[in-house]
Image (cartoon, helix red, strand yellow):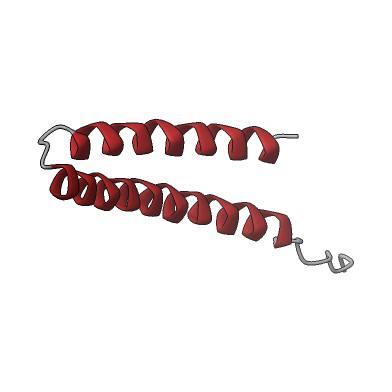
Length: 75
């Protein structure tokens, strides 16, 4: 008869998965809020390029935050 094996500890895997899903939500929220801000600025200053510009900056900011978070996870 073989001795029973202890169950695997999946807590680290679950923590990593939760952190990665949080990153996706943060990225989407950053881009969405950047788009809303750009749209509001377009209306306020009667321009047509601010929405695109602020949204693009929000995309770059969210990518930076994702890279920073992933590097912290790999430590």
